[in-house]
Image (cartoon, rainbow, N blue to C red; front, side, top):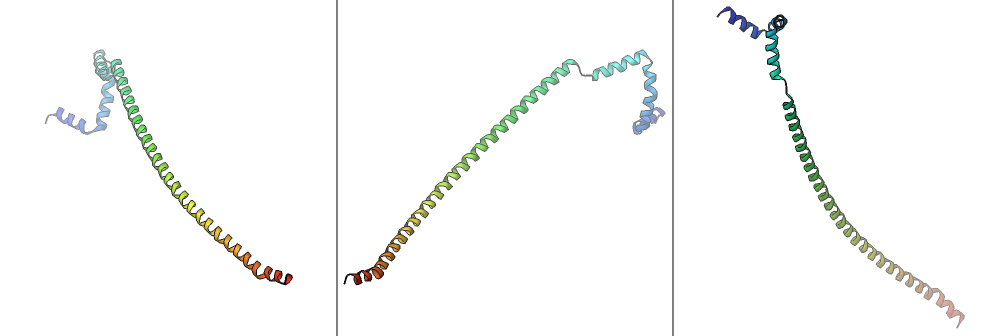
Length: 143
């Protein structure tokens, strides 16, 4: 292997050596007008142009609109799901209300039945008291 190839191989392997070589060569290279022009030409190829920026701005705007559309679609889907859940909850609540109302009406009917039995029992007790206490008194008063 030639000395130049060996030197290149060593420069490729050793990052510190590359940095030191660049620090030595760049100031020297920039002193020469033609080398400065070549460096600026190479750098200018990598610089974004106004057209590049406008194209990028358009791409960003399209992405923003796509993202907005996607988010809007997701929000609309979620709103639809929430509405469906609300409808299901309302239907279940209505069913529970109907069931509870039926049970309450059944309890009211039972309470009314118990009330009638208690009232009839009280009337029977009063009649029995009248028959056992008042009737003998009347019989004594009017012999």
